[in-house]
Image (cartoon, rainbow, N blue to C red; front, top):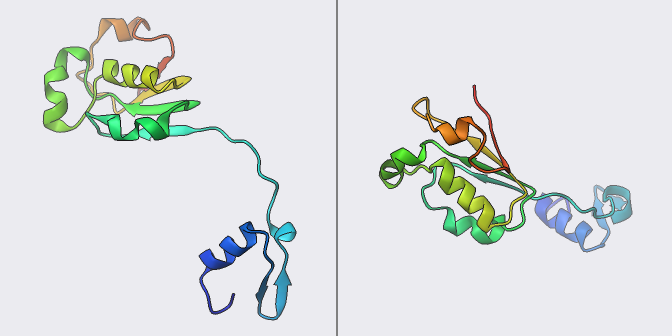
Length: 128
């Protein structure tokens, strides 16, 4: 493996093949842990149309989605490539995400439903 890429060594080890580097043989069992289940986290930044991420976002344990505008300012989303809180909530429901965290919240955001926590029961907001 000294003359091939690290990616090649990694691929061989993941395929349960030993790799020899500098005269030393490395067995997969020496460097790889058993596979474990993880969680899916989806990050969606500055988008007015997250549809391209729908399939990979399905069933996310956590979705972090920008929500620059309140629903009253929805006319600005395509112009500036941002989402409303309602759009983010809708996308989280479509993808069956368990928890939604809104980010990139504009100082213009003044949605009374949001402030009262009524926007969506699975929504949390990170505010400076």
